[in-house]
Image (cartoon, rainbow, N blue to C red):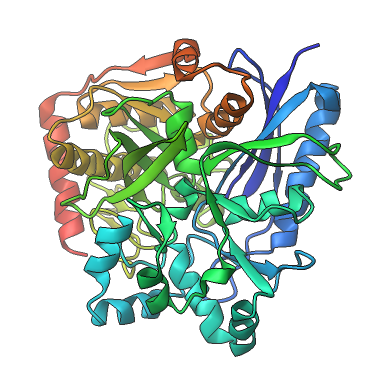
Length: 492
């Protein structure tokens, strides 16, 4: 009977439960979507109970479909949408408000006020982040500003805060464990990168009481055991967790400094392992904790394009140009080039290196000859061009470019997009056999905690490449497209 690590990948639009074997292969998966809530323009919310139902249902249906016995599950690993902010009752775990999702822009005025107070450099230096609505801290501030009752109850110790990892561990352990790992904590604006601790100097301007915060823990450790659930037995160790992008870096076996990956999901997120010391960026990239393992902390530089796969979804749902996301590749291949069309997919603002929270999507170069195929191609190019800008900034910060970019996420299955990326970067793009490396990373961390795998060397030896995309385009094409992109960006 085969033993597995159960990985919970709690994402922005759904939850996926996966069974990962000792061979690092996914032996079963099941995804359950849940609704997105948009109460106001620029606001994005999730109902925490709908997230919990999706977790329960994904696990139940996975185990049923695979015929997996409970005793085959050695441990649980968790990876999650990172900055999404929750607040719930300490006694019974009942959420007191909808979760404020990482994409939500409602705390922009709070960020601006902190900037006006001259605090941005302090937060940049201490946390590696910028003052942007993306991060958890100002979302929590907004909740307290909107409700004096919530603020008072938090100060009195009746309410507790967490990102999704914290909420899931709390629920899985029957309310016994209130923790977050340092990779998720490094996305809150409240943790010091070097001390790996909550810092009063960061909490006070946000008006966040320390008593509401979870305990900070490593990314690989037994945090607690399942308890009181109707879909898993008591006693399974919850043994590893990391934010989704850090988990993907780990799942791509980027264990050494200089190794990098890009995850193409709702957004596109590139991370490069920079070793055991945090490195400030000259280009607005973020410095973040990659993971803490065996007492050693690894850091990463991160660049984020808020919209990647979501741009394809917009073509499908907003414009009706395609019936499924998979159709975009064939549509874009109907034309040899973009016909002069440039699409900047800033549908929820621009991240690094621009950090323009008020930017909005822009399509330029439309003519009477523009077709749906041109727009489809421009959309894929817009994704690849955003990533190119991030890679270039990262190379300048680190002093050299990585030799290869590992890729994963749903949109990494698009061969045309991956070839575009290799052509724009003028370097190889490597796609692994298992593109669900976010969940794989969570499973790896949990497995290391319980001895399912011995060490990262064993994991690196087991990582397998499925396809490598080598650069094929001429430099004239690359330079022309980059010039078109820079001209369009400059007009925003």
